[in-house]
Image (cartoon, rainbow, N blue to C red; front, side, top):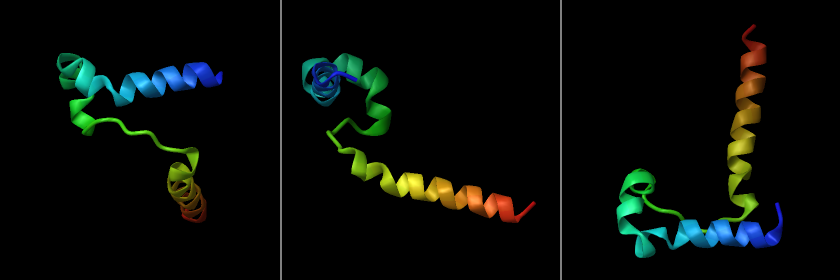
Length: 60
């Protein structure tokens, strides 16, 4: 994804609550809002997924 598009999406989501509270109520409120995060924050999810796959394979 081009850096300019990534920046625009990040800006849109992280400022939605302040700029468009009515829209935020519909699509953002159920997750509590949006904050910037780097890819490294998701490493724990990847590790959990791999662990689940290995566990499932041993149960067959």
